[in-house]
Image (tube, rainbow, N blue to C red; front, side, top):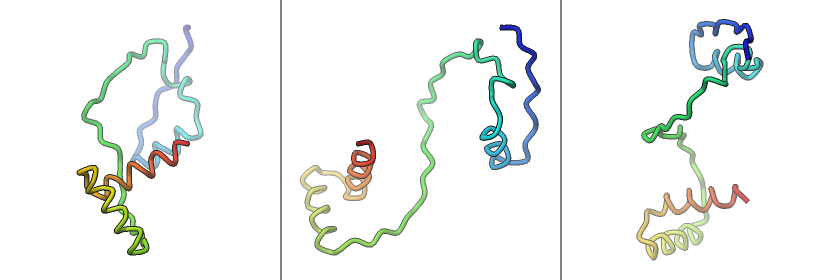
Length: 87
């Protein structure tokens, strides 16, 4: 595939780059036939803090369930939310 590729523009920040790639086809800028698979074992997903109000009785039940599994209750909540959103 000998396609004339456009040069990737320089971006001032990540938000500008994100907007660009949301509206442009990367195959106009990158020869994906030469791409190599990579592993990024230390890559951490971005997180954000939220405030979540729960009834005391529900939080107590979650804490009991987490204690039975010997995990922090916050981790158990994240696991349960991830499982539910995957369905």
